[in-house]
Length: 296
Image 1 (tube, rainbow, N blue to C red):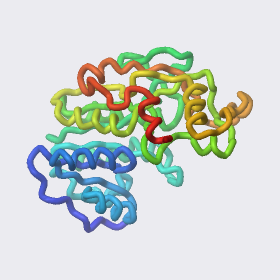
Image 2 (image 1 turned 120 degrees about the horizontal axis):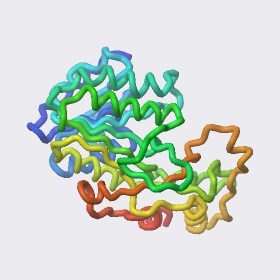
Image 3 (image 1 turned 45 degrees about the horizontal axis):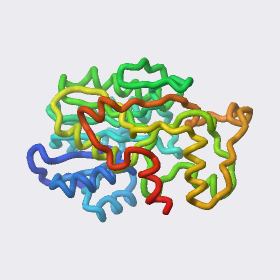
């Protein structure tokens, strides 16, 4: 990939941020920060996405952390939010994408910058409906979540104390993203156990949690989820009712055993630390408040 000819603007001290991996969450985060007077840059791998970011007011930087030639001019930011995910079309595996990429990026960021790393509640391995929080053990068994956990540890080892936060996000939903709604309208089976728990966070609330970490000066891990884990049967039933669809169809256990599905988890996320230290009141405390305006 050629080096980007898009350089960051002259940022105001302490009110500038680089969103490295400016996708669905990053765009919402960038919009909220722009409304608060921040200078916002967002990285993307593709020039088409760069144009789209520019149209929203986010200054685009074309960069791929697996290509060190594209990692110049990143040391002037006071705040860096890292929100990289592996494309389903990528030829690189999760470890190369998330861990080796972060290893390339960290030396290019100012040692004084505050970093917020976006991880996943998938790092929790529990599958019996247990409650989990920041103190719970983590033994993930999927390549993506093992890589996220390794990236978290890499950040801890390579950054100064009190200069980073790690946010383990539940499933993000919001405008133009209602997971599996197409399966319901097209009467396709959902590969999930209807009696297992789903943990969610609306993209607007997730962005608010990220912004709260930019104001802190400590090192902290947070789980970011709404106030009510929901059984998948109830979640998909709610969507089907609002869309006027028949009851959801769930794949048989035998069929689910043949695929590696993200819906295999079954835990309940307790967000007490987030509510106490970052976001005392959610705009969308449960999926009901969040989904209703999207579906209506």
